[in-house]
Length: 267
Length: 134
Image (cartoon, rainbow over all chains, first blue to last red; front, side, top):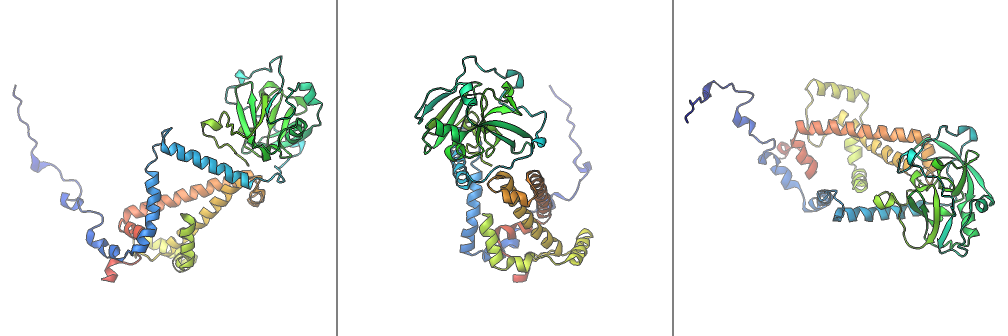
């Protein structure tokens, strides 16, 4: 099979822009930079090599999990935790607001949709484990008999102010004979959530086991029957629907923390 | 990297000599010269617009770090958050600073693309025209 050869007439092609030879000229010629290169001393070259080293590190970022980069990022997160723990003081209080500033309706937040909120199990008791002298579980009535405080506080970044009443966690921990020198207080929730906090934050005067939201017992969507409310940390640390409290020296992570959220998340 | 670079800049007199802004009249005249294509370009010598932008972006980076700290730790560094007028305002200032840095980078990189020869001086740090040294 033969096709008629239709070669384009080369000479008639319109020439766009500059001639080809000129376009291939490099933006920087060797002659132009030679005096610059001579002037770079050994010392300054070494100094600037430092920043090149930083760039070389970046080139290793393939952002895949279970890689060396992933491990390095976890090391950075643990370092971040230590910096935040060093910055933390139990004497510095989160800002409080008048009762009139309470936001209504209050925003719902969980790792699931609002229709998936679970009611409190009928046989609910607050379980205790770990470095605690009296591990007897607590009923809701016993918890409500403890002295309570009321806080009007904002969840950082939300611009939503809530009114929470409950038992200060430091009072509860002392009452059950928890080892207050332990590293962590961990919370397990019956909605599948979990989190853990450092002991200094657990002993902060504004950290409470909340029982009421705006003068009413917590509704399921606000964390019934008891939830953590810790205004010196980001919102996700305030675990809802608490089932068990553990005092421990073993790092316990949490639902979001195990997926790469910063563990300390203090404010 | 930023902190040692900045301290070197301050101690060597680089900021005082090369970056300190030169007043609004010089900025306007240099800006006009640049827009009409009559502004010469000497490596290592910054015109009034460059001085304003470089000094400005250093200031904006400082504001960005300070507001960043204030929204990172609004309880522990509450005095810093109050200094910026509270958490929501500090957050807006932080966003604004970020936008300013991005705009600076767009102008900066566009001009580097137009004058690629400056890239060598930026990386190598030599501050004179090759012709002058011949």
